[in-house]
Length: 163
Image 1: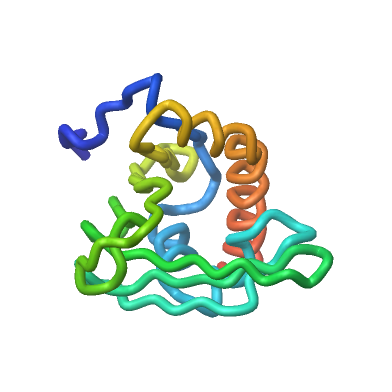
Image 2: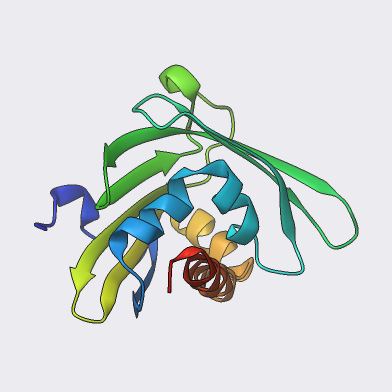
């Protein structure tokens, strides 16, 4: 996989999580692109995802509803920008489905999956408009939350994979 220019990381604006996970890119891809799977891991426990809608095409909808431990619902909607099966998924909340601009964009996510002898190099870059957005996302627990979610994804995928 060659890195495209939009993967360049600006340390003042972007947050990065990169790890090698011991599951295949194909299984990670399935976890990210099938609502019944994404609902099981996409929020760090004890949070949960009550709803998920995926229209996996550029301009298609990526919608989730996260639920806090107290039962408060937090809907999120975005738009897919780029899809390269088993390699790359780019989505943003700056655009709604059909590339319609949103009122309060927060970030664009660039997920890349690269085969590795031990499984997959999993890399997500959260790109923000400004330093304040990056700092807000970091203060919300980006690294801890996305790491927990990745652990949950790996555990779920292993449970699904034939032994």
